[in-house]
Image (cartoon, rainbow, N blue to C red; front, side, top):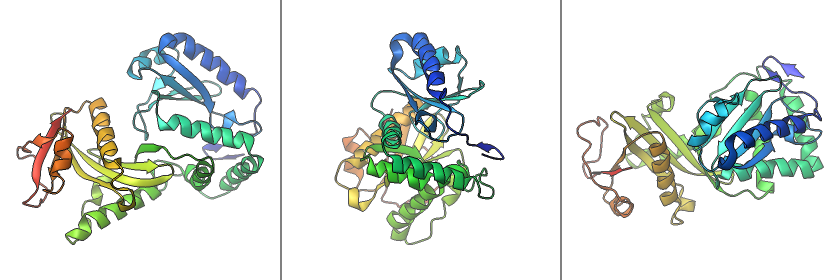
Length: 316
């Protein structure tokens, strides 16, 4: 069944063989850098209808060192896309391949394997997912993107995927770029509740959602968003953390420290040299504990600020 650019076909028993051939080539080319290779996505589930695309998770010891070898065997590197710490590749052959590269310990590995294994072992979920895909393809403009980086087709599967992950017991922490409407709505609510209601005023900076110089992250615990970060990119490889917040119900469990650590790690991988914060007096000890010291913004900042705020920073 096809609707414009969305194609879903009946299960092809040759899909596992296509995966095995690609996996063997990858293992041979990467040699000692390769840890694991997994067939994931709908083509990895027997008898499930699917887009005719082979999704592969590759676990490597060093992501940066995998790029050139993978490109030498036909994979095109496309960056991390919407998932921090992922290296994403595609290979355009008769049955295209999407390659998702992670280093050991990434929660994305467990998420994909749990989802795959649940569908393989649970016939009711298997049938429900197949029928959902068929239903989505009958809807108008299903291929279009609606206030998101994803098509309506992919967004239409979101609730089912979250339900399966909950049933499978997935509860790991994940940092994600804000990309779809549910994440943006949660982001708006966090910004208003924890920052702008205290002024009080309406959030006048939602325009940053549409600018490349601003990065917005959400922190998931399992399928629930529990934290949010707004980063602004400055010249000279500097970044400023405009907002970092953990939902009240999840505070005092070290999630804030973990979220800060992930942001520092991501910025460093992007080539940033320092991270700056306007800290309230109450939060100063938190930043000081993690190596932040008083560091002036040097006139780069034009945002309104509380005169009590302390300008701090850290070399990454």
